[in-house]
Figure 1 (cartoon, rainbow, N blue to C red):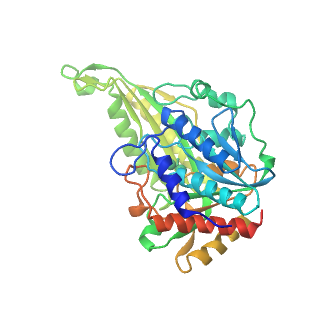
Figure 2: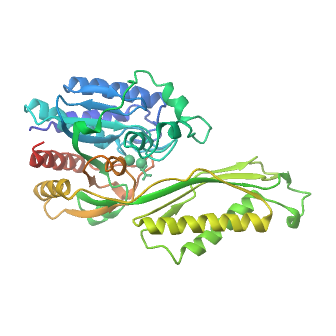
Figure 3: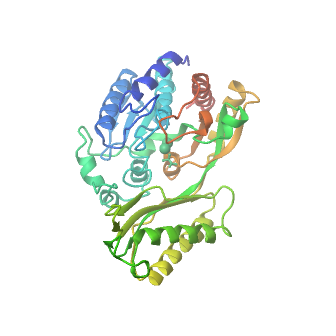
Length: 399
Ligand code: HGY
Ligand code: MN
Ligand code: MN
């Protein structure tokens, strides 16, 4: 097949225009936002032009279906609240370019997908989690974002959704191209990463309820300060995790909502996100026990209330050896001496899709290892190299 790298790059930059924000190439395009809905409408048009049959499913996953059973390529086109132009979008547009080039070459049939809410405005990789049966639709509809907007209401507001989900049996496998979002390839001056496995994740919201009071007249010993509780929780957790973690274990308190968030009021409530990731499912469980025990112990000591939200998560998954070998062959062809096998510390839709079919992933470098940041970027020659590896793998698989 003859790839058209100018067309590929042109579409990547066009997609960046939906929700373009900040300096450089940043985007703000969270799931079901106006920018996301417009971007998917544009993608639908590009899929039609490519000779694919668009199908927007009930939860906003947008498929471009080939005329026959096929390999599925893609990723997601929603972004973090402050996102980069390539996270997810790269895999969708690379998949579209390979599918187009394949149609122009007379085959093989290739389908494309842009999953919805991979970035977890509502859940964790919500759109592909629902499609793969990782989470029931009813359960997902009850999820809400940090502003209290429900997933069910958000998806209901999206025009053009079909009544039905696409049958996964239409596909023989899934390959997701993505930026690495970390420093490994960039620091090694490598161009391609062939993913060996994707870490697991656990994510929950925790609320400490103390006592809102006057910041001047309330003696320290009489306070039930929700921020102090969170601060104490974080210190104890860092200490207790020490004996359990490996250098690749990560954990993040990324969202904190302090109430009422005023300088002269002792905060009476704090709601925060608690997220941890590891390549080992048993260790994820061990860390969960530490999280729950530490929060409970602290609430008891401080005589404050404690509420755990639903625990969301995905287990670690290994990539399919056959699809991986096709990618390795492409990497050796396109970037000899400049590629490596590597794990993924970021989460991807491929984790959910692995419940349905063989999956594999390939990475291209992130400049400075930066992602989930307006400054996220990748050199264009690396983007095109990744596209060529993807197309080579599709050719190898002859699907
Ligand atoms: O958080 C992640 O790993 C993904 O980028 N949503
Ligand atoms: Mn992503
Ligand atoms: Mn992301």
